[in-house]
Amino acid sequence: MLSAAEYRGTSLFLSDQVKYRMKIAIDVSHINRDGAGIGYVIKGLIEGFKSMPEHDYLLYSREPLNLELPANFRNLVIPHVSRLQGGGFRWYSLMTEDMRAKSADLYISTTLNVSSLYFANTMQIVYDLTPLTNPEYYRWQDRLRFRIMLGIAARSSRWLATISQTSAKALKRKFKWLKAPVIVMPLGLNAWVSEKSNAEDYERIKAKYDLPEKYFFSISTIQPRKNYVGMIKAFAEFEQKHPGYKYYIAGGKGWYYEEVFALVKKLNLEDKVKFIGYAPETDVPTLFDNAVAILYVSHAEGYGLIVGEAMARGVPVLAADLPVLREIADESVAVFAKPKKTADIVAGMEEVSKRKHYTPNPEFFKVHNWANTAATLVKAAQ
Image (cartoon, helix red, strand yellow):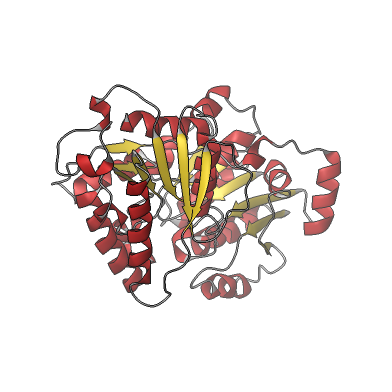
C-alpha cells in the first residue's frame, strides 16, 4: 500500500487501486461551531461513517470529544498550539504530521485551511462560494481570507467536495485551471426531521411561544443574506389583505440585524412579527408542522437545508428562486419567488398559503442521509 507521502507528486489516484480497508482522517476541531453549518456537517459525517465499519477513522480535535464512538474510531487530541497569529498553521502542520505517521490513506478537511499543503490525499469540503459570488453580504476581511484559503485548497487538494451542483459549477467557473476532481456530496438531514410531533407537543409549544392558528415560519441566523427585510416587507403587504396571520422567526442575531428589528417597529408589526430566538431541536418539529408554510427567500445560499427539512416534514415552502434551491425542490413542493422583488414574494405568500401539507416522498430520504454522504466521499477516493 502506498503511503500518502508516496502519492505526492504523482498522477496516481486511490481510484486506480484495488479497494481496501482505508484509514480515514477527519478534522473535527470545529464540531461545536455553527449548529446548522460546519459543526452540523462534522457531526453528520461521523454518524454517516459509523455505517461503514469496514474502514478505520482518525478524528482530530483540539479537545476531547464528548461522543460515544465505535471501536474503529479514534479521537486524537492535538491541543491549541497558540492563539497568536500563525498558531493555527502550526496546529494543522502537527495534525497532518500525525496523519502521515499513522499512514492515513485519506484526509477529509472540513474547513478551509492550509492542511492540504502538508498532506497529499486531502479531500477539501467547500460548502459554497457565496463570499466570491455574493461579496456584498460579507465583511471585506472574511472575503479576503476566504479567497486566499480557497485558492490554496484548490491548488493543493487531491479532491474538492461541494454540497451542490451550483457550487461545483461555480468552482469550475472561478478556477478554470482546476485539475482536482469535484465531488458533489448529498447532505444528510437533521435528526429531528424524523421525530413525530403530537397533540401534547403542540399544546406545550403553543403555550411556550404563544402560537397563533395561522403563521409563517422562518429559521436561520438574522443577517442580510437571509433577506428578512424583504420577507417582512412582503408579509406587511400580505397581512393587510389577510389579517389573522403572523410571522414567527427563530434564530440568533447575526450581523446588521438591527435593520430587521427597526423595520418591524417602523411598520408597526410588533404584534405580528415575532422573534423567538434560538429554538431547541425538541421544539422545531412542532414549529414546522403547525406553520402554514416555511419562508426561505434568501438572497444567496450554498445549499438551503431548510428547504430540504420542510420537504422532509411535508410542509409547503416559499423559497428563493435560486438555482441551488431548485436542485432540492420543484414546484410540486415549493413556491419560488425572486428575493429582490417584494411583489413577487407577496404573490408567493398568496400561493403558498393555499397549499396543503403533504406526505413526504420516501425517495428523498434515500438520497438525503449521512450514510449516503459518507459513501459518496469514500467511493470517490477509492
